[in-house]
Length: 477
Image (cartoon, rainbow, N blue to C red; front, side, top):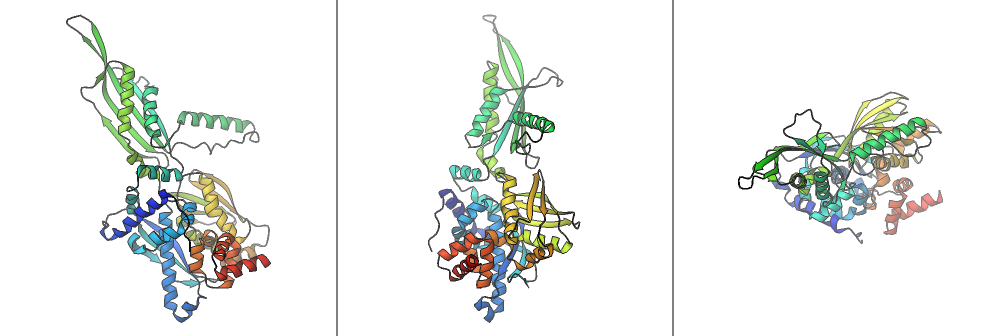
């Protein structure tokens, strides 16, 4: 089978991951890990399983492990890129679960679902720090390109100056010279410079316009996002007047008495860097030259390597509020569906209210780009494909809270049956390669073709007979 073309940057990522896998036995016991939940599937209709049920359980666990690793890799590579390069990922990464999975935290008892699949839920601790370390082996250009895939990060800058001889009650002034030097420094990394002042001003203007007439404004306040990182610095100067004995002339110089600098990750509020410095024997003949050098000095505190450890955030925890789940069992089934989705690392069912508000705490892989669009494409759409109608609707995604409606104009009882009888929502965006390994029955493949026709068509184009028959059955329905 011909493997799809891949980008140089992605090849390098996987090569780095492969290097990590070969060194896996040397991992330190205190290496950074993350816990990932996933669902494994197996088709009990496979002929080989009829002769050996133990082999089916082995395949079930293997699929669960591969899903765990796929989610871990998805923390650094967006879902689209992962799917497009699935063959290479499988060859280089997914088949090496023993090198990435530290231990199995919890494993459910396998069960046969009404959807025709064997299921198992797995929670595993994964070495994620080594994947980060592997990224350090990539070249500068490849790192920038990979970071851009996560939404070309934004950095805001604020540098103030203060006269050391004046009291602290005097308001410090912004230094455009120092700020511009620092902005130029960040721009060389391929990052975008963001103005928090302009963003705040626009938010106020939009809010005022919306208060007057919400129908006349199409600009969203939530669309005006803050920078990913904010760098702040303050410098203190004092004038030094020196009188030359020979000429009697008085020369004024500017000495830097101290400067502080900090960096805040606006996604979490964490102050990821802070430092104070008191320079010695450093002075300038004029104030502008001093400020220009200050921008350069602060820039040296923020190398590209500093940001790379923080730019690609591994996960985001948010609260998912679902309206309209009719009973607790449905809420539990919804949680299981969520565990299977590629972008969901972990789910906790917090509160339930029949026909009201049910609350889930969700750990979500990938936070860059348009968060609303990512949630809609990786969570809402796969769920709707399972039910073959738009029963889930994203109604709000603001800050750390996402709200989804669950409703239908048809028979709710018939709809709820699909929770059990239709294939898992995770198969709505499964790759052809996974479907080929997973499905061994025509009726099962036909069900999957209804929710993931593109992957089944691709599989049919590769000569898979089950996929061909399933596409024909769907077309003739």
